[in-house]
Structure formats: C-alpha cells, structure tokens
Image (cartoon, rainbow, N blue to C red; front, side):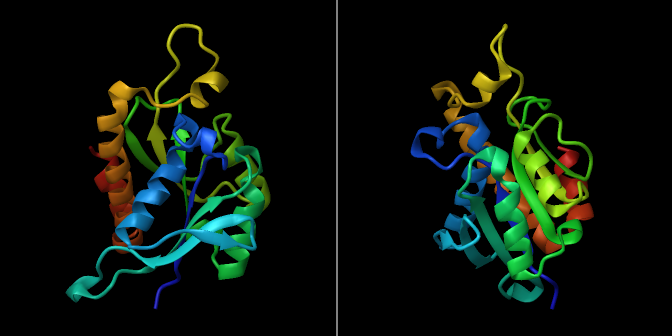
Length: 198
C-alpha cells in the first residue's frame, strides 16, 4: 500500500479573500473535495482537511488515499499547518507533499508541475520551505499572469478574478484537479510530462 499524498491548497482564510487570485489553491482543493463527495472539516493542525480517495486505481478500485488541506492561517503562515499535517499523517514532504499555488510568472490559466526550486517571492511557499526544512516538495503552479500597467503585484494577487475570466477559471480549476489526480494515481513524473506538455 503506497503512502498517502498530502495536497495543500494555498490561500487566505476569510470569506473576503475567497475569489482572489491568491486563493486559487483553495479553489482547486474545493473542486477535488467536491469530486470525492467530501467536505473539509476543522483539524487541530490549524487547517481544514478532508481524507478522500481520488480517481480510480487499475481495475476500477477506488483511487489512492489523499489528504486534502487548506491552512486556516494567512498565506505567510502556511508552513506551520503544513508541517503539522505532514507529521500527523506520517508523510515525507520530499516525496508525498504537493502544494497548489498561484504563480505570477506564468500566463493566466497555465498549469505547471515542478519539484523543488525557489519560492519566487511567494510568501506561502517560503513559509512551507522553512517549516518542513526543505524546498524539495512538489508544486502545482497555477498561472495568474502579471498585473496590468503599474499595478502593485501585492494588490493584484489580492484582487478577484474578473468576471470575463470566470468561465476560463472554471476550466482551469477542473484541469488543475485533473493534474492532482494524475500525480496521485500515475506518479509525479508521468503527471508532470502530461501536464507540462499542454
């Protein structure tokens, strides 16, 4: 039996941030929980968590066990809940942690899987790297593009996706959920090849 994956979707916890670009990680977790017919509930690790099975195993059996989680802290404190959940579930961040986050350096609605690397100024990733003591965990980067004109990137990430992007956002969230299912069922490298060649 393979170890479960811990899937962390980054975002800020209050309702006013729910549709922000910075909260796209939470949005993907919500889609995955919905697919599994599950709801997130409060965990002592300061997170909202659902233990589910994702996708299908060969032969039509239920897919692998997965822990879906949204830290209940603000973005720059995401590391504490992530490290606590990894410890609670006995998960090695170097092999079975996948963090879903918004990415300014990718065109809007582009998806990329990568393992390790820097944080690119992303406070959530920086907090996680410090808390788990490594940068060598998997990430699903969801492109949000660069702010228009001279808009401050901090203001841009904390603004909602515009109405004109809503339909495209819905498609992106489903494709991101597909990417997570590919990681847990086919393995990171196979999923990376599939997702990054799009």
